[in-house]
Length: 30
Image (cartoon, rainbow, N blue to C red; front, side, top):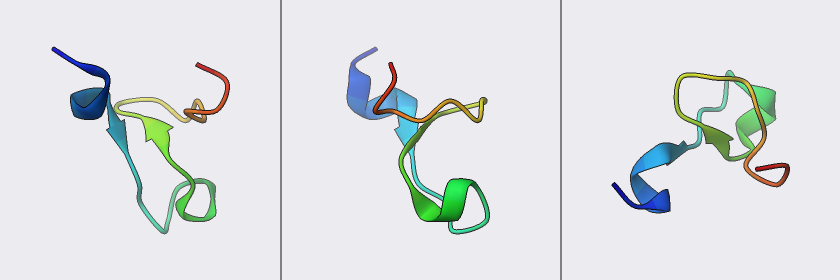
């Protein structure tokens, strides 16, 4: 699994900022 499969963006989560899938952790912190 690569990093692109773990990151998602949803307008209802963190105002659409990229997050790690299954969490509310911003991708910028990971």
